[in-house]
Length: 215
Image 1 (cartoon, helix red, strand yellow):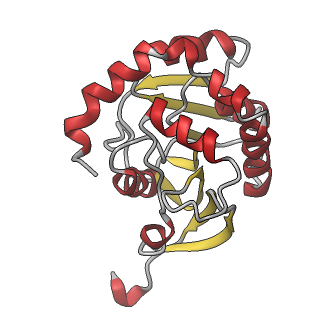
Image 2 (cartoon, rainbow, N blue to C red):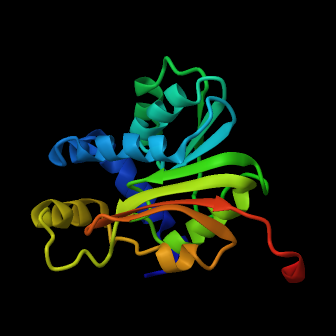
């Protein structure tokens, strides 16, 4: 994995160039990604208020779902690509509680302990430095808040029933996959849910306080 800082411009240019094809990926997966996004949001058990961050928000499929769920709160979506954010804005123009920021998830432009929850669906597998992005998410979420992740794994195992789709996805979006569980567990978190979906993994953790002896 190369240094994400060397890849930032390439990533931004790729998504700007392919923005209009972005949603084709959801079509190819026959709606399974949107179904999985809904399941992850439901499993996180969010309240209907608070401040929620949507990492790699893309064209806003997950952000729109979050904005409906957190109807008395605010959702902030961040993405590196200006062009996908334009589509996001058009798609979610009726969600006044959804705001968009252009920036990198490996260096979030937000203070410590800002958000009640952080989501990243179908994003950690397409970025350079997913471990750095998770550490940034951990920094930005409040103690007691949740981080919810859904992404393709790097090690998909021998029975990848979606082999063609996962290979095509990797080729188009440079999706190397991410096996984040060991890195997540090195942080001060409580595991709320972990599901190994063979070619993907779903993780929900809650940020906890450090034990007094470690402070």
